Image (tube, rainbow, N blue to C red; front, top):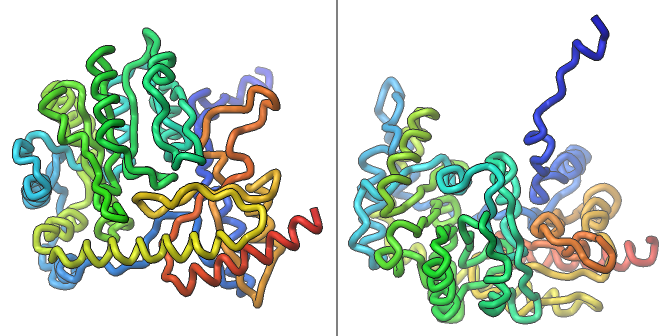
Length: 413
């Protein structure tokens, strides 16, 4: 037998799964830390704000032994807490049967894609978009169809005809995120009305990633897909997570919410196949109804302050391309005066040091799918995503480091 017969190739699907632009440079950061370098992490949305005390107490007072499986749909106490939360937020029609607990918001996105699409189907997204949508699309054999938005107007949606031009007989859904990761954009009621109208006209599913629902600034409020769910009950799917809201990134808890019984029955079958999300995580998170309202008000105010400091400091850098201030979430897409932002990000981690400190950023090209018609280069190649999840002192120091690094990088390269 020929030696080539002894080796089997991996699947084409596996080859198409992209590396995360948020995490792909982690080995460089780890090496820098091993070398004793302080790294300021602005690359990932991992908040430094404390988890609510009432949730931590659920861990310190844990008395269940043994630690068993939870229910596949979700731990009953957590499902009740989620329902109560949605009722308080103004959506009393949501019941436990409309909620599927997921292992992070990521699993909710993947479950939704699998539920509504066959391999080869298309889902419209507005770029820049959350980079890991690329991963879930590749795993599920789905094609993402990007529609560009512009930095100049804060990455708000284009006019209706531009969206409709992208709809084909393979289009199954539109996927949105508001407040947006990675841009911080909060879609207006007029924008949401337009999307609902398009979904109705073309009988499309509308997937709404609402992980950052409470993170809105300057008096703005998010317009949730929940507000339209009874209007398009079979087409609306909300994707949610507790990771950012309560600083529970490590707990890995999210949910998928829909009034479509066929979808809910189907995602439960998927959930049964992976058995359950973590019991300890869910028991802890079920205390969300006991978190005081002051917690979120304080969190909101803190992130708005961080955003303002970040933009004030970034505005001092010569040649930087800033969008209008983000309206929500805790991210910003920023254009740097370099040709290759990923190379600059590597330079920060491997070469540049300022008082033995440096910064980690996320190259923004991975948040785009389009390429330039004139050059063929990936759009966003000179941009980075900055997550303002550190305190204002650390943010000021980080921008100081970036400023000095840009001077050295531009003069050397």
